[in-house]
Length: 345
Ligand code: DAH
Image 1 (spheres, protein in one colour):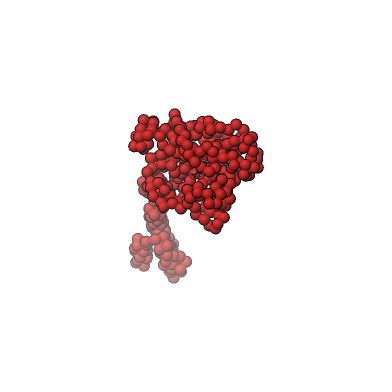
Image 2 (cartoon, protein in one colour):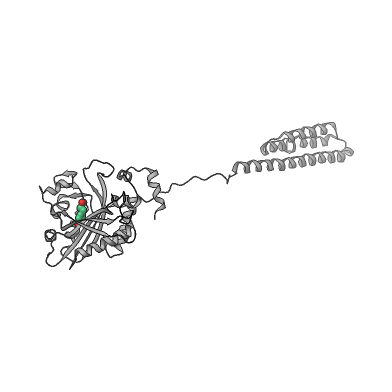
């Protein structure tokens, strides 16, 4: 091999050796093997040689060309492998890394109680009614037999929006709407769960916003015994089998007679404990027979039909059922509190 060829070969070797990328190697290929490359220019020298030297010279240049091509190919394979390796390293997924947790909410305990009551009463053939929280004085008070200046209005400190509009103080307002809507048609069998509002100072047992569920049944021959059986069934479903229910005389303007309803303490089974203040009974709701005047005002003949009604506080039920001692917990949106309910159905 001529000196010139030796030189080209060694230049090519080191250029190939030091090529750091496929692009760089391609530049080396063009520099040596391209149309204007060093090896092509060696070929061009052939025409200046004597005829007999031409074949040997041509053979040598060819050998050189093959040698450089081979080395470039080798290097190319090497670089391609490295590039692939680098790409794989960049794409590597560490499957042992812990994933991002998706926050899943839980059903609010009050909604849980509402749903349980709805299921229970739907199963007994009741319908579920819904109505406005911004209510007219007419439904909240007038039709419930609580006219203006009636002392019973003081029992329910009311948020007034204007003299005739207020935030409903009890779901009994819905009882009146449904009675009016029925337009004298029997039977009526419904519950109405929802939010109610009173101007109370919030403390462990009072909240200016809370929830109630109203119950109303009107038909022929409905009696206090029907009310008692229904409430006993409800108490057993909500607080465990075998709950007993006791009526104590009370007063509500929209019922006559009116009763406060106690349930036998689910914690001590009626024997007496700190929760029931050693009485064996816990008060859970107000109820009664729909007042004849209420029936009349809403277009029913109290001689031909009768009805019972009740109103239960959902917070009270939830507090007893889940052992919660502060009503404000329901409204603080503290996740530590709310998340404890994911273990209940
Ligand atoms: N509305 C009453 C209250 O908020 C609860 C109540 C008592 C509802 C007796 C009734 C009932 O339907 O018959 O305190």
